[in-house]
Image 1 (tube, rainbow, N blue to C red):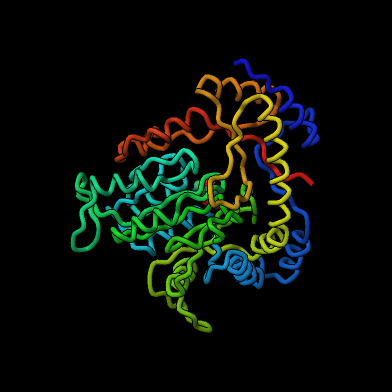
Image 2: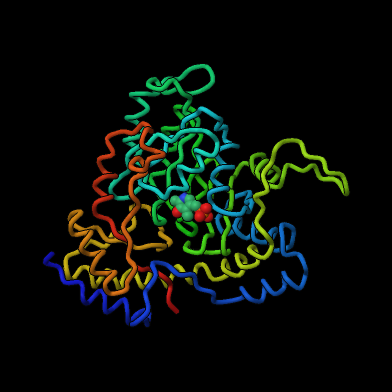
Amino acid sequence: MKKNFSNVFSFTKEFYEKFDEKIPLHEPVFLGNEKKYVNDAIESTFVSSVGKYVDLFEKKISEYNNIKKSVSVVNGTSALQVCLRLCGVRSGDEVLTQSLTFIATANAISYLNAKPVFIDVDIDTLGLSPDALKNFLNEFGEKREGGTFNKLTGKRIAACMPMHTFGFIVRIDEIINICDKWNIPVVEDSAEALGSKYKGKSSGSFGKMSAFSFNGNKVLTTGGGGMIVTNNEQLGKQAKHITTTAKIPHKWEYEHDKIGYNFRMPNINAAIGCAQLENLDNIIHNKSITYFKYKALFDKIGVELVKPPKDNDWNYWLSCIKLSDRKDRDLFLKLSHDEGILNRPIWKLLFRLKMYSNCQRDSQKNSIFLEDRIVNITSSAKF
Ligand SMILES: *Cc1c(COP(=O)(O)O)cnc(C)c1O
């Protein structure tokens, strides 16, 4: 490789003030009331699944995103699973999604005994391509009694789940238009996109249902946690019910009307979330400044720092560069790790993993192109 990354590496070390320690890809920051609220939750004895912070956190997430209903759960994966189930995904169904994603997207589908079908992504959004989706449905879709079916497999296509990679929002309006024509509900995997907006509207507010993750590496953390969001009041109520053991409210009787889940977010985690949300815009602003510092350095050496796609107000969660080929990618990763800077490649495409190798997929041309070239660079907020 002809590129000289030494200025980028020395900037990273000075910026994060870490010279002998390893620099992680993304660390959480706790700037405000986290300890105070956690302490308050402990003092109240409501540390588990009931408590004021759970209700408050749900309310605040709804307000922040301008979405009607929010239901907090133990993690983003369980949030996705519940969204898919409530949108009608059943055993034996198929769900259209991307193979360029974190494994949780496909696992949530598998937990319902449904199967992912992998559609290619766009180069600029790194997420599900409306053109590829349209082509797939024109070739394999067949509208019949009971929904849209896959002519090749005979299975019902029960949902479409695009994922907003690194907080970049896909062409969600086009995807929803296509899916509406085929009567396929859209679930957004917004796990990485809290705080991102598309044409002025929040991530998670477009699909029939959506899920956020608050894992420790995301832009906002509750330790571990997730949120189901929807503008459909009825689905919101069902989500709350099914994630809280499907218990019928009663002062003392144990009455449950279906096999529900114990997916409730503990109050202690919600307390952290409430404090984090107070600083979210501050954190996003801080990360945006770092992005532009990286941009100047990468511009100088002729390396592309990937820019947010059109119509996006990005949450700056994880920045990434696009190298010229797989060889350059591997060399950059080696040099980074030699310096103790834990930059990481984008995910291995899911159809390369044994469990998902027999899933139907299209050409995957753009996904393969990006898999060979995209590397995330250390992007923690720094105050
Ligand atoms: C983090 C993540 C999830 C899962 O969230 P968890 O809270 O870790 O279960 C799902 N999808 C994507 C794309 C993610 O990045």
